[in-house]
Image (cartoon, rainbow, N blue to C red; front, side, top):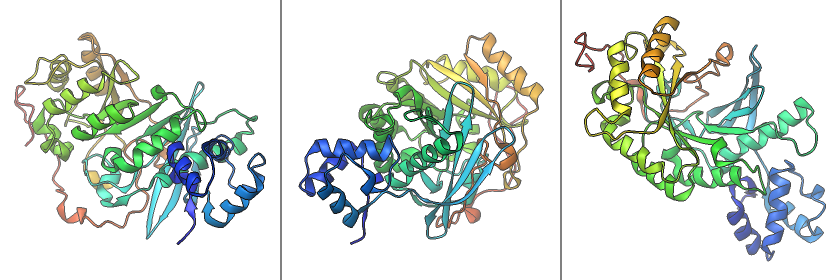
Length: 383
């Protein structure tokens, strides 16, 4: 049997592992702090652990992030890392520095099975779920790398926020996701607040409910359309979990959420989902005036589309984005427009692709026809 990667464990898991080695829980806490607070991978340097435990660990365990393939830096300071996760698969992780925060965008799968029309990852298909160690390993690597690069003093963190918005649908890798979230939140590890850890989902309704019960963090939902006909074209998962069910799950989630709102992500696609009529439909949807969907406490985040050749889609003009945003704000919907970061290194929202050995044959299944909305103002469907 190969060595165990200790990045696979949250604190309870590490305590159980140490118990199997005949060690008490406080040893697991000490080890956990060495791994995550100090980013140490060499057991011999973990000075407050008993030598017998250090020697034991050296024979059965490792601390190992995914292997780095490449690092790219954007003109705006964004950094993108490409990691090898084996069997021809590679995933991407992005660090976005800002004046008051450092945000790490973390991947959860090699590829994605959801197949959203505007997402480069979805066009690559799906290979496999990442293990907890591969999810946590992205944060572990980034902290070590950035502390060295930025010459941060002992105890100062480079990463203040984590968003599960990289490659993959996090809630379709739930078993590995939750222990990874617990590591991020644990005071013996990264100590991030629940408000500063965000899971983004395309709308896996049953798992939204499970996350609410198991590990409620900030939630972002990839909405992208205000009616089922158009959303089913852009986000195929909508055919299984339509808007009314999704918004009901979001309302339930707010009972335990660390914020008093859900973020709704809306990728702006020229003459597809950016018309004034669709803005008005969106207002009615979030105010609970459209169909069976409840009113929702939310913030709309409008995202300029980041083009890639296979999509057949075009970014909305700044003028159309501004007009769309103004209609929402006039109706009392809190609305922001995301600033595009890292697009010169294909690190912006929707651009992460990595390398995926697709086992879903997505290219044979994905329709190549462009998405167009009906001209009828009241319809809002797709042609």
